[in-house]
Length: 330
Ligand code: ADP
Ligand code: NA
Image (cartoon, rainbow, N blue to C red; front, side):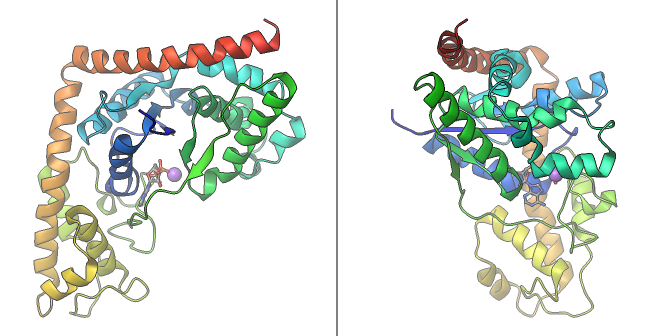
């Protein structure tokens, strides 16, 4: 098959993914696994660039992988694996760090922002070289396409520069990856503060819908969503942020255009919309949570799936690393 190679990684940063992650990222990943030779990696090496509790990190890594599989990431359609299971990531990162200029790395704005906020002694060297590890993640698999948001553009540019530099100094080795702009997906906002993006670092837990929440908790969060004092169900993010967010969620999960929903709810109350949406969200996330729980209660099965991923990833990564080591003179 000639499906282009796509690489994407996600940090295991909490016990549960949220509705924003599901609509904004997971749904795309599931559809992309059909059109691409997709590598999806839980990037635990990246996580330790800031202090982690080891037990929590281990649990979050498994929980994240389980939720991905439960949401439709199919280990037989793509390669789903844990970064630390494939040593070639750290090995290639070392080689690439040796062709990265110190000044070049110092210009990465994400690191500059973080070290300015927390101070250079509270910021690890790992965080500084994070973009080089990301370059290794991508380049090991002959990646052609990388879905990137604005915040990762500069890192992808560095990846491209390092790949070209290595190729021109030591011989053609790496594919030069390009940004993949996935088809537009809705941005989901906090249910209690609909001006802010839904995020795991939400101020109020009531504003954040988690995949692992119980049906009752999810339904309650939707029914308690902040709206406005008008009565019209109308999409207007400027003036009706809460209602517009509910309509976006509804539209994304049911594949119904927002104007169709507006027609459907003309003359009806906010309570009706919330009640129906609670059913939609519970109907979508409930089965994902249950499947994730099943996987977590069957560690051998989850290990089996992750071992398959590690094996498939290792086969490709080791081949690239062998060429790299040869070119370098090892
Ligand atoms: P968080 O903001 O909770 O820390 P991450 O930054 O870890 O989430 O995001 C992981 C993925 O989920 C990214 O691809 C991001 O674009 C997507 N995502 C996160 N929050 C939202 C949201 N509120 N709406 C849409 N997509 C989101
Ligand atoms: Na974030």
